[in-house]
Length: 171
Image 1: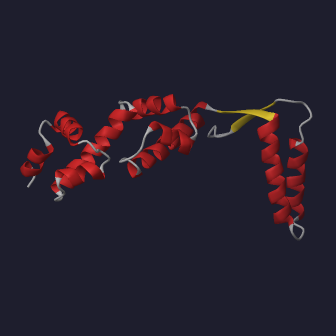
Image 2: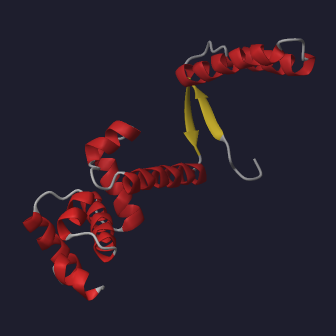
Image 3: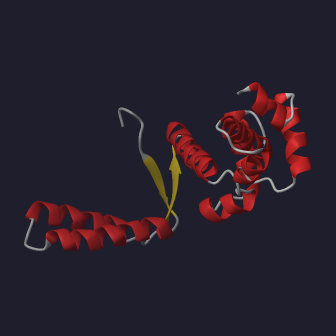
């Protein structure tokens, strides 16, 4: 309570087994009879199942923010690993949030839309590939672009020069 790090549970229905299960857990911990660890595991599973089905639960504001921060870090890591192919549908399949949520979350943490964020990552990676000796085509394919004219146009908008000029400038 001192740090306000707890979850609030509110009963959905009156006849919940959770209090009885918690008493059984405490009893098993106190007695420590042979096999009590296996019994505890089963009791924990029953308790969690009961809490999920028989209670509403809420996190306090600080815990909600921590959960949101962790969610964003996981999404950011996923995007960084799959930048050359990632799309909103992939994020929804992986993390099970509504597709609009990702744009809102990225806007909040990065100040841009999902597409702008992914484009920036791709272009930064492409620039890195170009400076390490990749051809324009190879860099383009590595970062997930398959139309040279589209890649050159987007790269030029971002860096102010074409990929080939950028490559020559960085040599």
